[in-house]
Image 1 (cartoon, rainbow over the protein chains, first blue to last red):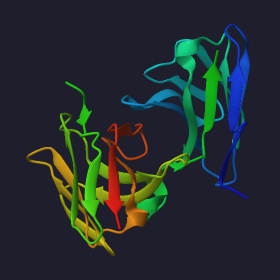
Image 2 (image 1 turned 45 degrees about the vertical axis):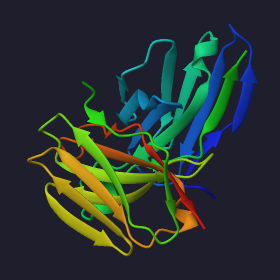
Image 3 (image 1 turned 90 degrees about the vertical axis):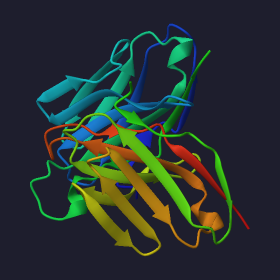
Length: 118
Length: 112
């Protein structure tokens, strides 16, 4: 099984619909992130959570909300989807960096959710 | 000016070539530098990690950081078609207390 699992892998939805993207991880990491990736714009941070009780807005949080249901689960919601939210969405995890070793701080990404809003 | 600048490419090279990928940045507080590789339809995966200035080598890959010039590089020796991917640089100021800032990625195509 993948360390970071995103569901669904692909989704087509209509404008105005509410949609939830889910992310679960088995890494035991305390930090989780949601990014969107668009051609020419790269990865942009939507929301991040450093632990279960911590939620922070990223650079493009408008139109999105998140819920950290447990250490291992972080979901992203689009309350009323619009076409310019069509993108590839990635969930990522990392630990707090308290450990030793260079790879401890690296982000582990899921395989992504391709969302199309029509 | 964007915090991290990276040429989007595509960069096309023949198999066996030495590849140089680069990023410039403006935030002098950045201390932790990473390179991620992203294959088509996949999530990025961590390739190299460097703290502060200097070089780090891992097999065919060398990461180089020049903080005085705010410039980082990734070199790939003896490039292979399997290296064809998008390479993203990423950096942060404080380990564990800040998020990563990513470059937009450079697409690399290695032809057989």
